Amino acid sequence: MSELVPRLRALGGSAAAHLTVARGLFQSGRHGEALRLVDEILDENAELGVAWFLKGLVLARLADFPAAAECLESAVRYDEDLVGGWLGLAYVRSECDELKGALQAAEKAISLDSHNANAHLMRGHVLAKLDRDADAIVSYRQALAGNPQLMIAHYRLGYLLEKQGQTDEALDELITAQRLNPLDANCRLTLGDLLRARGDLNGALEEYKIAAELAPLKGEAHTRIGGTFEQLDMRKEALAAYRIAIRRDPRLIAAFLALGRLYLAERCPGEALSMAVAALEIDARLPAARELQAEAQAAVDAAGAPRGTEEIGREIVEEDAAGRDSLGDDID
Image (cartoon, helix red, strand yellow):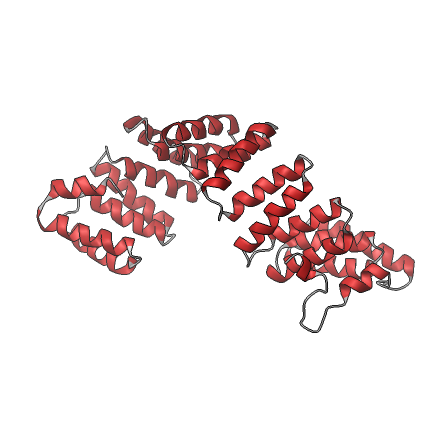
């Protein structure tokens, strides 16, 4: 948006005034009004690149990516040096899975401003989507050279370094990202994953618990908490964590599968079978769910009836009068 200001000043007259108003409407979240005003401007100034740029930004914010792409293509056609236009175009093309075009747009932005950290960041995002991790790492490093405070670049760099097994450097990047934005749940989850992979299970639990607090409507953190408790041989706590994950996201198939596997290990085949059936209702073709169903059914048949009578099974299956797991308060 910073490129709009000098261009508006250069325009002068009523078009500049109206675009300034439209920009303010967009920034305040009044997207419909902003669109109407920009359309009025374009009716009078159809080749005004900065107006097409603003319209593209509004449509992108509304997640109408194909329409946003058309507007941003018009923006850079009429104003080829508009770096933000090329960046916006790279973003919406990426959202439309037009990755080759997205990469071309990001590289055009870099050619116009080689020190633009956001341009290198966008190129890194597209390269990562293309599974060109080594090239993406280079782009993220270039982004950080231009702006060391760019949290998302630290996070993405750390994630890719972890994938490549460079865990020491990955840890540094993820800790930096977490320090720059302590309220980012995804960063907390990724940092927890890395700590867990390195054997620091208590450190991982701490990050997962904070992530759960930051994203209370999602279950991914509690699924990871359950897995970590399993590694610590804290089975009752693991079962409770998986159940919390399912309550928070009833379509989180990973939690159903993990809970089913743990029920099976604890000789509660009936409950395991229920989890497998629930997972198959979400994805009827998932091999892991079919395998769990077959194993649980075989265990049920071998027992003659669903057991579910082991001590640990009783403690977890029974919920208290408040509708919560008796162990849930320990980790929720």
